[in-house]
Image (cartoon, rainbow over all chains, first blue to last red; front, side):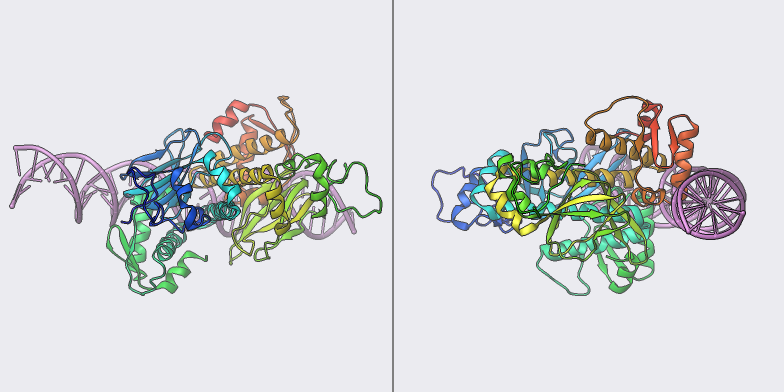
Length: 247
Length: 247
DNA sequence: CGCGGGCTTGATTCATATCAACGATGGTGG
DNA sequence: CCACCATCGTTGATATGAATCAAGCCCGCG
Protein backbone atom coordinates (compact mmCIF):
# COMPACT_ATOMS: atom_id res chain seq x y z
CA UNK A 1 0.00 0.00 0.00
CA UNK A 2 1.35 3.44 -0.90
CA UNK A 3 1.89 5.88 1.94
CA UNK A 4 -1.38 7.61 2.78
CA UNK A 5 -2.13 11.16 3.89
CA UNK A 6 -0.18 11.76 7.04
CA UNK A 7 1.44 14.51 9.02
CA UNK A 8 5.14 14.13 8.31
CA UNK A 9 7.06 12.71 11.26
CA UNK A 10 10.55 12.84 9.78
CA UNK A 11 12.65 16.01 9.64
CA UNK A 12 13.26 16.52 5.92
CA UNK A 13 10.43 17.55 3.55
CA UNK A 14 10.25 15.21 0.60
CA UNK A 15 10.17 16.47 -2.95
CA UNK A 16 6.80 14.77 -3.38
CA UNK A 17 4.76 15.86 -0.40
CA UNK A 18 2.75 13.46 1.70
CA UNK A 19 -0.77 12.83 0.36
CA UNK A 20 0.69 12.69 -3.12
CA UNK A 21 0.62 8.92 -3.17
CA UNK A 22 -2.55 8.59 -1.11
CA UNK A 23 -4.96 6.08 -2.64
CA UNK A 24 -7.65 8.61 -1.88
CA UNK A 25 -5.74 11.45 -3.53
CA UNK A 26 -8.39 11.87 -6.17
CA UNK A 27 -11.32 11.25 -3.87
CA UNK A 28 -13.66 14.16 -3.91
CA UNK A 29 -12.39 16.06 -0.95
CA UNK A 30 -8.69 16.02 -1.73
CA UNK A 31 -9.07 16.31 -5.48
CA UNK A 32 -10.02 19.96 -5.03
CA UNK A 33 -6.52 20.81 -3.86
CA UNK A 34 -3.81 21.14 -6.50
CA UNK A 35 -0.68 18.99 -6.21
CA UNK A 36 1.42 21.95 -5.24
CA UNK A 37 -0.73 22.68 -2.20
CA UNK A 38 -0.97 19.19 -0.83
CA UNK A 39 1.12 20.08 2.19
CA UNK A 40 -1.79 22.23 3.38
CA UNK A 41 -3.93 19.13 3.45
CA UNK A 42 -1.24 17.02 5.03
CA UNK A 43 -0.80 19.59 7.77
CA UNK A 44 -4.35 19.24 9.01
CA UNK A 45 -4.75 15.53 8.45
CA UNK A 46 -4.02 12.52 10.58
CA UNK A 47 -3.79 8.95 9.40
CA UNK A 48 -5.74 6.31 11.31
CA UNK A 49 -5.66 2.52 11.14
CA UNK A 50 -8.56 0.41 12.30
CA UNK A 51 -8.98 -3.30 12.93
CA UNK A 52 -12.23 -5.08 12.12
CA UNK A 53 -14.84 -4.33 14.75
CA UNK A 54 -13.08 -1.21 15.97
CA UNK A 55 -15.29 1.84 16.34
CA UNK A 56 -14.00 5.18 15.16
CA UNK A 57 -17.10 7.24 15.91
CA UNK A 58 -19.68 6.66 18.63
CA UNK A 59 -23.20 8.06 18.60
CA UNK A 60 -23.01 11.19 20.71
CA UNK A 61 -19.36 12.00 20.06
CA UNK A 62 -18.51 15.61 19.28
CA UNK A 63 -18.53 16.07 15.52
CA UNK A 64 -15.16 17.82 15.35
CA UNK A 65 -13.68 15.75 12.56
CA UNK A 66 -14.41 14.53 9.12
CA UNK A 67 -12.83 11.49 7.48
CA UNK A 68 -11.88 10.11 4.15
CA UNK A 69 -11.80 6.35 3.70
CA UNK A 70 -8.34 5.57 2.31
CA UNK A 71 -8.80 1.81 2.24
CA UNK A 72 -11.02 -0.89 3.67
CA UNK A 73 -14.72 -1.12 4.39
CA UNK A 74 -16.56 0.49 7.27
CA UNK A 75 -20.16 0.88 8.26
CA UNK A 76 -22.31 3.61 9.69
CA UNK A 77 -24.76 2.22 12.23
CA UNK A 78 -27.49 3.36 14.55
CA UNK A 79 -28.64 1.46 17.62
CA UNK A 80 -32.13 1.51 19.05
CA UNK A 81 -32.41 1.61 22.81
CA UNK A 82 -33.60 -1.99 22.83
CA UNK A 83 -30.61 -3.15 20.84
CA UNK A 84 -32.11 -3.08 17.37
CA UNK A 85 -29.41 -2.10 14.95
CA UNK A 86 -29.76 -0.47 11.57
CA UNK A 87 -26.80 -0.08 9.28
CA UNK A 88 -27.21 3.26 7.55
CA UNK A 89 -24.44 2.88 5.00
CA UNK A 90 -21.39 0.88 4.03
CA UNK A 91 -18.35 3.04 3.44
CA UNK A 92 -15.75 2.03 0.90
CA UNK A 93 -12.51 3.56 -0.32
CA UNK A 94 -13.09 7.18 -1.24
CA UNK A 95 -16.20 7.55 0.93
CA UNK A 96 -16.49 10.60 3.05
CA UNK A 97 -17.62 10.45 6.67
CA UNK A 98 -18.78 13.15 9.01
CA UNK A 99 -21.63 15.25 7.69
CA UNK A 100 -23.34 16.69 10.72
CA UNK A 101 -25.68 19.63 11.21
CA UNK A 102 -25.05 19.60 14.91
CA UNK A 103 -22.29 19.42 17.49
CA UNK A 104 -22.72 15.68 17.84
CA UNK A 105 -22.66 12.69 15.54
CA UNK A 106 -25.90 10.73 15.51
CA UNK A 107 -24.39 7.43 14.37
CA UNK A 108 -21.51 5.04 14.94
CA UNK A 109 -18.77 4.25 12.49
CA UNK A 110 -17.20 0.82 12.77
CA UNK A 111 -14.57 -0.95 10.67
CA UNK A 112 -15.75 -4.05 8.84
CA UNK A 113 -12.32 -4.93 7.44
CA UNK A 114 -8.91 -3.53 8.38
CA UNK A 115 -9.23 0.08 7.28
CA UNK A 116 -7.30 3.27 6.86
CA UNK A 117 -8.87 6.65 7.41
CA UNK A 118 -7.59 10.15 6.88
CA UNK A 119 -8.94 12.48 9.53
CA UNK A 120 -9.36 16.25 9.20
CA UNK A 121 -10.34 18.78 11.80
CA UNK A 122 -13.57 20.27 10.66
CA UNK A 123 -12.76 23.84 11.59
CA UNK A 124 -9.35 23.74 9.94
CA UNK A 125 -10.96 22.56 6.75
CA UNK A 126 -13.18 25.64 6.56
CA UNK A 127 -10.40 28.05 5.46
CA UNK A 128 -9.43 25.64 2.70
CA UNK A 129 -12.94 25.81 1.33
CA UNK A 130 -12.49 29.52 0.85
CA UNK A 131 -9.03 29.18 -0.60
CA UNK A 132 -10.11 26.42 -2.99
CA UNK A 133 -13.71 26.96 -4.06
CA UNK A 134 -13.48 23.79 -6.08
CA UNK A 135 -12.95 21.89 -2.86
CA UNK A 136 -16.07 23.37 -1.41
CA UNK A 137 -18.05 22.53 -4.54
CA UNK A 138 -16.83 18.97 -4.33
CA UNK A 139 -17.84 18.87 -0.72
CA UNK A 140 -21.35 19.89 -1.68
CA UNK A 141 -21.48 17.31 -4.43
CA UNK A 142 -20.38 14.66 -1.93
CA UNK A 143 -23.16 15.71 0.40
CA UNK A 144 -25.64 15.42 -2.45
CA UNK A 145 -24.38 11.93 -3.22
CA UNK A 146 -24.84 10.90 0.39
CA UNK A 147 -28.40 12.24 0.27
CA UNK A 148 -29.07 10.31 -2.90
CA UNK A 149 -27.78 7.04 -1.56
CA UNK A 150 -29.74 7.48 1.66
CA UNK A 151 -32.86 8.01 -0.39
CA UNK A 152 -32.10 4.94 -2.48
CA UNK A 153 -31.99 2.98 0.77
CA UNK A 154 -35.28 4.56 1.87
CA UNK A 155 -36.91 3.33 -1.31
CA UNK A 156 -35.42 -0.13 -0.87
CA UNK A 157 -36.56 -0.45 2.73
CA UNK A 158 -39.97 1.03 2.12
CA UNK A 159 -41.02 -0.69 -1.06
CA UNK A 160 -38.95 -3.78 -1.86
CA UNK A 161 -39.36 -7.35 -0.66
CA UNK A 162 -36.56 -9.52 0.69
CA UNK A 163 -35.47 -10.93 -2.67
CA UNK A 164 -35.47 -7.55 -4.34
CA UNK A 165 -33.46 -6.05 -1.50
CA UNK A 166 -30.86 -8.76 -1.67
CA UNK A 167 -30.55 -8.63 -5.45
CA UNK A 168 -30.24 -4.85 -5.37
CA UNK A 169 -27.64 -5.13 -2.65
CA UNK A 170 -25.48 -7.54 -4.63
CA UNK A 171 -25.63 -5.26 -7.65
CA UNK A 172 -24.75 -2.34 -5.41
CA UNK A 173 -21.76 -4.21 -3.98
CA UNK A 174 -20.57 -4.97 -7.47
CA UNK A 175 -20.99 -1.41 -8.66
CA UNK A 176 -19.07 0.01 -5.72
CA UNK A 177 -16.20 -2.39 -6.32
CA UNK A 178 -16.31 -1.85 -10.03
CA UNK A 179 -15.75 1.87 -9.71
CA UNK A 180 -13.21 1.41 -6.93
CA UNK A 181 -11.19 -0.82 -9.23
CA UNK A 182 -11.82 1.30 -12.34
CA UNK A 183 -14.01 -1.06 -14.37
CA UNK A 184 -13.30 -4.77 -14.64
CA UNK A 185 -16.31 -5.99 -16.53
CA UNK A 186 -15.40 -9.68 -16.92
CA UNK A 187 -18.54 -11.80 -16.66
CA UNK A 188 -17.18 -14.35 -14.20
CA UNK A 189 -15.39 -11.90 -11.93
CA UNK A 190 -15.48 -12.59 -8.21
CA UNK A 191 -16.79 -9.78 -6.06
CA UNK A 192 -16.14 -9.38 -2.37
CA UNK A 193 -18.74 -9.49 0.38
CA UNK A 194 -16.72 -7.83 3.14
CA UNK A 195 -19.49 -7.91 5.76
CA UNK A 196 -21.19 -10.72 7.64
CA UNK A 197 -24.72 -11.99 7.01
CA UNK A 198 -25.79 -10.21 10.17
CA UNK A 199 -24.47 -6.92 8.80
CA UNK A 200 -26.32 -7.46 5.53
CA UNK A 201 -29.51 -8.20 7.46
CA UNK A 202 -29.12 -5.06 9.55
CA UNK A 203 -28.58 -3.03 6.41
CA UNK A 204 -31.54 -4.44 4.49
CA UNK A 205 -33.98 -4.44 7.40
CA UNK A 206 -34.21 -8.25 7.40
CA UNK A 207 -33.11 -11.08 9.67
CA UNK A 208 -30.01 -13.13 9.17
CA UNK A 209 -32.13 -16.20 8.40
CA UNK A 210 -33.97 -14.42 5.62
CA UNK A 211 -30.71 -13.17 4.12
CA UNK A 212 -29.34 -16.67 4.17
CA UNK A 213 -32.45 -18.17 2.61
CA UNK A 214 -32.67 -15.58 -0.15
CA UNK A 215 -29.00 -16.05 -1.03
CA UNK A 216 -29.50 -19.81 -1.14
CA UNK A 217 -32.47 -19.39 -3.40
CA UNK A 218 -30.60 -17.08 -5.81
CA UNK A 219 -27.80 -19.63 -5.88
CA UNK A 220 -30.17 -22.57 -6.43
CA UNK A 221 -31.74 -20.74 -9.35
CA UNK A 222 -28.33 -20.37 -10.95
CA UNK A 223 -28.41 -16.57 -10.82
CA UNK A 224 -25.34 -16.19 -8.63
CA UNK A 225 -22.55 -18.37 -7.27
CA UNK A 226 -21.16 -18.20 -3.75
CA UNK A 227 -17.69 -19.76 -3.86
CA UNK A 228 -16.97 -18.62 -0.30
CA UNK A 229 -18.95 -16.89 2.41
CA UNK A 230 -17.39 -13.60 1.46
CA UNK A 231 -17.43 -13.57 -2.30
CA UNK A 232 -19.95 -14.00 -5.08
CA UNK A 233 -20.15 -13.99 -8.80
CA UNK A 234 -23.02 -13.07 -11.07
CA UNK A 235 -23.92 -15.88 -13.44
CA UNK A 236 -27.05 -14.37 -14.92
CA UNK A 237 -26.96 -10.61 -14.63
CA UNK A 238 -30.25 -10.10 -16.47
CA UNK A 239 -32.15 -12.25 -14.01
CA UNK A 240 -30.41 -10.63 -11.05
CA UNK A 241 -31.42 -7.21 -12.32
CA UNK A 242 -34.95 -8.48 -12.85
CA UNK A 243 -34.99 -9.89 -9.33
CA UNK A 244 -33.97 -6.48 -7.99
CA UNK A 245 -37.17 -5.07 -9.43
CA UNK A 246 -35.25 -2.10 -10.90
CA UNK A 247 -32.46 0.33 -10.20
CA UNK B 1 -49.78 36.54 3.66
CA UNK B 2 -46.86 38.93 3.37
CA UNK B 3 -45.31 39.35 -0.07
CA UNK B 4 -42.76 36.59 -0.66
CA UNK B 5 -39.43 36.60 -2.43
CA UNK B 6 -40.11 37.77 -5.96
CA UNK B 7 -38.52 39.50 -8.85
CA UNK B 8 -39.99 43.01 -8.76
CA UNK B 9 -42.54 43.52 -11.48
CA UNK B 10 -43.44 47.14 -10.73
CA UNK B 11 -41.33 50.07 -11.88
CA UNK B 12 -40.27 51.76 -8.63
CA UNK B 13 -37.86 50.08 -6.21
CA UNK B 14 -39.31 50.01 -2.73
CA UNK B 15 -37.37 51.20 0.26
CA UNK B 16 -37.76 47.73 1.76
CA UNK B 17 -36.65 45.36 -0.98
CA UNK B 18 -38.58 42.24 -1.94
CA UNK B 19 -37.69 39.21 0.15
CA UNK B 20 -37.65 41.43 3.23
CA UNK B 21 -41.11 40.31 4.24
CA UNK B 22 -40.72 36.77 2.97
CA UNK B 23 -41.97 34.20 5.47
CA UNK B 24 -38.86 32.24 4.61
CA UNK B 25 -36.58 35.24 5.10
CA UNK B 26 -34.82 33.60 7.98
CA UNK B 27 -34.81 30.12 6.50
CA UNK B 28 -31.32 28.81 6.20
CA UNK B 29 -30.54 29.79 2.68
CA UNK B 30 -31.69 33.40 2.76
CA UNK B 31 -30.62 34.09 6.32
CA UNK B 32 -27.01 34.12 5.13
CA UNK B 33 -27.62 37.30 3.15
CA UNK B 34 -27.73 40.58 5.09
CA UNK B 35 -30.83 42.78 4.81
CA UNK B 36 -28.96 45.32 2.73
CA UNK B 37 -28.14 42.77 0.05
CA UNK B 38 -31.52 41.20 -0.32
CA UNK B 39 -31.97 42.62 -3.78
CA UNK B 40 -29.24 40.25 -4.92
CA UNK B 41 -31.39 37.36 -3.82
CA UNK B 42 -34.53 38.83 -5.28
CA UNK B 43 -32.79 39.29 -8.61
CA UNK B 44 -32.15 35.59 -9.06
CA UNK B 45 -35.35 34.28 -7.51
CA UNK B 46 -38.75 33.55 -8.90
CA UNK B 47 -41.91 33.05 -6.92
CA UNK B 48 -44.04 29.99 -7.70
CA UNK B 49 -47.53 29.03 -6.59
CA UNK B 50 -48.72 25.43 -6.63
CA UNK B 51 -52.12 23.83 -6.20
CA UNK B 52 -52.53 20.52 -4.39
CA UNK B 53 -51.42 17.66 -6.60
CA UNK B 54 -49.36 19.87 -8.88
CA UNK B 55 -45.85 18.62 -9.61
CA UNK B 56 -42.99 21.08 -9.57
CA UNK B 57 -40.18 18.61 -10.25
CA UNK B 58 -40.34 15.38 -12.21
CA UNK B 59 -37.85 12.55 -11.90
CA UNK B 60 -35.40 13.07 -14.75
CA UNK B 61 -35.78 16.86 -15.00
CA UNK B 62 -32.58 18.87 -15.32
CA UNK B 63 -31.47 19.94 -11.86
CA UNK B 64 -30.96 23.59 -12.75
CA UNK B 65 -32.86 25.07 -9.85
CA UNK B 66 -33.13 24.91 -6.12
CA UNK B 67 -36.15 25.91 -4.09
CA UNK B 68 -37.15 27.23 -0.75
CA UNK B 69 -40.58 26.35 0.61
CA UNK B 70 -42.21 29.66 1.51
CA UNK B 71 -45.51 28.18 2.63
CA UNK B 72 -47.52 24.99 2.35
CA UNK B 73 -46.61 21.32 2.40
CA UNK B 74 -45.02 19.36 -0.42
CA UNK B 75 -43.62 15.89 -0.81
CA UNK B 76 -40.64 14.35 -2.47
CA UNK B 77 -41.55 11.04 -4.10
CA UNK B 78 -40.00 8.25 -6.09
CA UNK B 79 -41.93 5.86 -8.32
CA UNK B 80 -40.95 2.28 -9.05
CA UNK B 81 -41.41 1.07 -12.61
CA UNK B 82 -44.35 -1.07 -11.49
CA UNK B 83 -46.09 1.86 -9.85
CA UNK B 84 -44.90 1.39 -6.28
CA UNK B 85 -44.48 4.79 -4.74
CA UNK B 86 -42.23 5.79 -1.87
CA UNK B 87 -42.45 9.22 -0.32
CA UNK B 88 -38.92 10.25 0.54
CA UNK B 89 -39.74 13.35 2.56
CA UNK B 90 -42.43 15.83 3.43
CA UNK B 91 -41.36 19.41 2.90
CA UNK B 92 -42.71 22.17 5.10
CA UNK B 93 -42.17 25.91 5.27
CA UNK B 94 -38.48 26.65 5.34
CA UNK B 95 -37.48 23.34 3.76
CA UNK B 96 -34.94 23.41 1.02
CA UNK B 97 -35.35 21.41 -2.20
CA UNK B 98 -32.90 20.52 -4.89
CA UNK B 99 -29.74 18.82 -3.66
CA UNK B 100 -28.39 16.89 -6.59
CA UNK B 101 -24.99 15.45 -7.37
CA UNK B 102 -25.89 15.08 -10.99
CA UNK B 103 -27.46 16.92 -13.90
CA UNK B 104 -30.84 15.37 -13.20
CA UNK B 105 -33.20 15.16 -10.28
CA UNK B 106 -33.90 11.61 -9.16
CA UNK B 107 -37.25 12.34 -7.51
CA UNK B 108 -40.54 14.16 -7.97
CA UNK B 109 -41.76 17.08 -5.94
CA UNK B 110 -45.52 17.47 -5.61
CA UNK B 111 -47.64 19.92 -3.65
CA UNK B 112 -49.77 18.40 -0.91
CA UNK B 113 -51.50 21.67 0.03
CA UNK B 114 -51.53 24.99 -1.84
CA UNK B 115 -47.89 26.00 -1.65
CA UNK B 116 -45.51 28.81 -2.41
CA UNK B 117 -41.96 28.20 -3.51
CA UNK B 118 -39.07 30.51 -4.11
CA UNK B 119 -36.94 29.27 -6.98
CA UNK B 120 -33.25 30.07 -7.56
CA UNK B 121 -31.06 29.23 -10.48
CA UNK B 122 -28.39 26.95 -9.20
CA UNK B 123 -25.56 28.48 -11.15
CA UNK B 124 -26.48 32.02 -10.18
CA UNK B 125 -26.44 31.01 -6.55
CA UNK B 126 -22.83 29.89 -6.77
CA UNK B 127 -21.33 33.44 -6.86
CA UNK B 128 -23.37 34.35 -3.79
CA UNK B 129 -21.77 31.50 -1.90
CA UNK B 130 -18.40 33.09 -2.48
CA UNK B 131 -19.63 36.58 -1.65
CA UNK B 132 -21.36 35.40 1.53
CA UNK B 133 -19.46 32.51 3.07
CA UNK B 134 -22.10 32.31 5.76
CA UNK B 135 -24.63 31.44 3.10
CA UNK B 136 -22.48 28.63 1.90
CA UNK B 137 -22.01 27.33 5.44
CA UNK B 138 -25.73 27.39 5.94
CA UNK B 139 -26.15 25.51 2.72
CA UNK B 140 -23.84 22.80 4.01
CA UNK B 141 -25.69 22.64 7.29
CA UNK B 142 -28.96 22.26 5.41
CA UNK B 143 -27.48 19.41 3.43
CA UNK B 144 -26.39 17.75 6.66
CA UNK B 145 -29.90 18.12 8.04
CA UNK B 146 -31.36 16.47 4.97
CA UNK B 147 -28.90 13.62 5.38
CA UNK B 148 -29.87 13.23 9.02
CA UNK B 149 -33.57 13.15 8.34
CA UNK B 150 -33.10 10.65 5.52
CA UNK B 151 -31.17 8.44 7.90
CA UNK B 152 -33.89 8.77 10.52
CA UNK B 153 -36.32 7.49 7.92
CA UNK B 154 -33.96 4.63 7.06
CA UNK B 155 -33.95 3.58 10.70
CA UNK B 156 -37.72 3.84 10.88
CA UNK B 157 -38.29 1.77 7.75
CA UNK B 158 -35.65 -0.78 8.56
CA UNK B 159 -36.29 -1.43 12.22
CA UNK B 160 -39.70 -0.23 13.39
CA UNK B 161 -43.07 -1.96 13.21
CA UNK B 162 -46.26 -0.34 11.98
CA UNK B 163 -47.32 1.12 15.33
CA UNK B 164 -43.87 2.52 16.05
CA UNK B 165 -43.71 4.08 12.61
CA UNK B 166 -47.06 5.74 13.00
CA UNK B 167 -46.34 7.04 16.51
CA UNK B 168 -42.98 8.39 15.41
CA UNK B 169 -44.63 10.01 12.42
CA UNK B 170 -47.22 11.82 14.52
CA UNK B 171 -44.50 13.11 16.83
CA UNK B 172 -42.53 14.19 13.80
CA UNK B 173 -45.54 16.04 12.37
CA UNK B 174 -45.99 17.82 15.67
CA UNK B 175 -42.33 18.75 15.96
CA UNK B 176 -42.22 20.18 12.46
CA UNK B 177 -45.31 22.30 13.11
CA UNK B 178 -44.09 23.30 16.52
CA UNK B 179 -40.90 24.80 15.17
CA UNK B 180 -42.70 26.30 12.20
CA UNK B 181 -45.00 28.11 14.64
CA UNK B 182 -42.26 28.94 17.15
CA UNK B 183 -43.33 26.76 20.09
CA UNK B 184 -46.94 26.38 21.15
CA UNK B 185 -46.69 23.77 23.83
CA UNK B 186 -50.32 23.62 24.94
CA UNK B 187 -51.24 20.05 25.77
CA UNK B 188 -54.52 19.92 23.87
CA UNK B 189 -53.30 21.72 20.76
CA UNK B 190 -54.60 20.50 17.42
CA UNK B 191 -51.96 19.55 14.90
CA UNK B 192 -52.51 19.32 11.17
CA UNK B 193 -52.23 16.20 9.05
CA UNK B 194 -51.91 17.85 5.64
CA UNK B 195 -51.53 14.62 3.66
CA UNK B 196 -53.90 11.75 2.92
CA UNK B 197 -53.75 8.29 4.49
CA UNK B 198 -52.32 7.01 1.22
CA UNK B 199 -49.49 9.52 1.44
CA UNK B 200 -48.74 8.47 5.01
CA UNK B 201 -48.70 4.83 3.94
CA UNK B 202 -46.32 5.58 1.08
CA UNK B 203 -44.04 7.46 3.45
CA UNK B 204 -43.98 4.80 6.16
CA UNK B 205 -43.70 1.81 3.85
CA UNK B 206 -47.14 0.50 4.86
CA UNK B 207 -50.54 0.10 3.22
CA UNK B 208 -53.41 2.51 3.67
CA UNK B 209 -55.36 -0.16 5.60
CA UNK B 210 -52.56 -0.62 8.09
CA UNK B 211 -52.23 3.13 8.60
CA UNK B 212 -55.94 3.38 9.24
CA UNK B 213 -55.97 0.46 11.67
CA UNK B 214 -52.99 1.72 13.64
CA UNK B 215 -54.50 5.19 13.93
CA UNK B 216 -57.78 3.69 15.11
CA UNK B 217 -55.95 1.63 17.69
CA UNK B 218 -54.01 4.62 19.03
CA UNK B 219 -57.31 6.49 19.24
CA UNK B 220 -59.10 3.60 20.95
CA UNK B 221 -56.34 3.42 23.54
CA UNK B 222 -56.86 7.09 24.34
CA UNK B 223 -53.35 8.08 23.27
CA UNK B 224 -54.46 10.47 20.53
CA UNK B 225 -57.67 12.07 19.30
CA UNK B 226 -58.64 12.49 15.67
CA UNK B 227 -61.25 15.26 15.55
CA UNK B 228 -61.13 15.36 11.75
CA UNK B 229 -59.36 13.35 9.09
CA UNK B 230 -56.69 16.00 8.85
CA UNK B 231 -55.94 16.91 12.43
CA UNK B 232 -54.95 15.17 15.60
CA UNK B 233 -54.18 15.93 19.17
CA UNK B 234 -51.93 14.14 21.61
CA UNK B 235 -53.77 13.09 24.75
CA UNK B 236 -51.05 11.02 26.35
CA UNK B 237 -47.66 12.11 25.08
CA UNK B 238 -45.73 9.69 27.29
CA UNK B 239 -47.52 6.69 25.84
CA UNK B 240 -47.18 8.01 22.30
CA UNK B 241 -43.45 8.39 22.81
CA UNK B 242 -43.33 4.89 24.29
CA UNK B 243 -45.27 3.57 21.30
CA UNK B 244 -42.74 5.14 18.97
CA UNK B 245 -40.08 2.99 20.57
CA UNK B 246 -37.72 5.95 20.84
CA UNK B 247 -36.45 8.99 18.90
C1' DC C 1 -80.74 12.71 -3.59
C1' DG C 2 -77.30 10.10 -5.37
C1' DC C 3 -72.56 9.68 -6.54
C1' DG C 4 -67.61 9.23 -5.69
C1' DG C 5 -63.34 9.61 -3.25
C1' DG C 6 -61.18 8.75 0.80
C1' DC C 7 -61.40 6.12 4.83
C1' DT C 8 -62.51 2.29 8.04
C1' DT C 9 -63.25 -2.36 9.36
C1' DG C 10 -63.37 -7.40 8.90
C1' DA C 11 -61.74 -12.00 6.93
C1' DT C 12 -58.12 -14.30 4.96
C1' DT C 13 -53.53 -15.01 3.00
C1' DC C 14 -48.73 -14.64 2.77
C1' DA C 15 -44.05 -13.09 3.58
C1' DT C 16 -40.95 -12.74 6.89
C1' DA C 17 -39.82 -13.26 11.83
C1' DT C 18 -39.07 -16.35 15.36
C1' DC C 19 -37.74 -20.60 17.40
C1' DA C 20 -34.89 -24.54 17.01
C1' DA C 21 -31.46 -27.65 15.44
C1' DC C 22 -27.54 -28.58 12.93
C1' DG C 23 -23.28 -27.69 9.93
C1' DA C 24 -19.05 -25.29 8.56
C1' DT C 25 -15.05 -22.73 9.51
C1' DG C 26 -11.19 -20.87 11.89
C1' DG C 27 -8.51 -20.09 15.93
C1' DT C 28 -6.34 -21.88 20.21
C1' DG C 29 -4.16 -24.62 23.30
C1' DG C 30 -2.99 -29.15 24.74
C1' DC D 1 -1.18 -31.96 14.75
C1' DC D 2 -5.39 -32.55 16.32
C1' DA D 3 -9.37 -31.74 19.14
C1' DC D 4 -12.22 -28.48 20.95
C1' DC D 5 -14.80 -24.49 21.02
C1' DA D 6 -16.76 -20.29 19.46
C1' DT D 7 -18.58 -17.89 15.84
C1' DC D 8 -21.04 -17.65 11.84
C1' DG D 9 -24.15 -19.57 8.61
C1' DT D 10 -27.79 -22.76 6.86
C1' DT D 11 -32.08 -25.07 6.96
C1' DG D 12 -36.58 -26.51 8.77
C1' DA D 13 -40.99 -25.85 11.47
C1' DT D 14 -44.06 -22.65 13.27
C1' DA D 15 -45.93 -18.10 14.56
C1' DT D 16 -47.29 -13.57 13.48
C1' DG D 17 -47.70 -8.92 11.66
C1' DA D 18 -48.90 -6.69 7.77
C1' DA D 19 -50.73 -7.23 3.00
C1' DT D 20 -54.50 -8.41 0.36
C1' DC D 21 -59.23 -9.04 -0.64
C1' DA D 22 -63.75 -7.46 0.28
C1' DA D 23 -67.57 -4.79 2.11
C1' DG D 24 -69.42 -0.88 3.76
C1' DC D 25 -69.22 4.01 5.80
C1' DC D 26 -68.89 9.00 5.81
C1' DC D 27 -68.85 13.36 3.94
C1' DG D 28 -68.72 16.80 0.48
C1' DC D 29 -70.55 18.01 -3.82
C1' DG D 30 -73.13 18.12 -8.09
